[in-house]
Length: 187
Image (cartoon, rainbow, N blue to C red; front, top):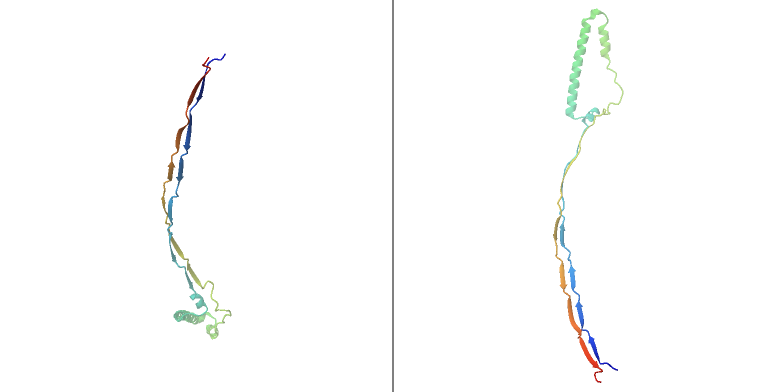
């Protein structure tokens, strides 16, 4: 025996989803930067060195001197010779006044005054030690430096951002369906 049957065939609805991804682009431009470095200012002041050499004493020792110095020297030697001659004559006069004390002052004075003194041998034109005088003043250097700091200007550039939003599209891919059929209804 066949029993009546109800047959149901169903089909579910299907949804389809189509997505487009979002797009984002970020670009960061470099900062605008300017740097200037002014030169340092430098001033140098120099006082030159000074060297004085006085060799007049060395020239005098070598008997090479100026006429003024030579005249002064001769006048001093003349005054000294006059003083020595006066002293010699005074002492000889004193010897003659005391002739009664014995001795023979006339003969001793005649022998003494008859001959010049012996000249000493030697080199006399060499300058004496330390005859040349030196005076040295070293140079002075004064420096003045003014440092100029760098001039830095920076401009920040904002980032460039572009954004395209994504999309989501939904649609019905397949409709739902329900089919009902009956079998074995007739008997």
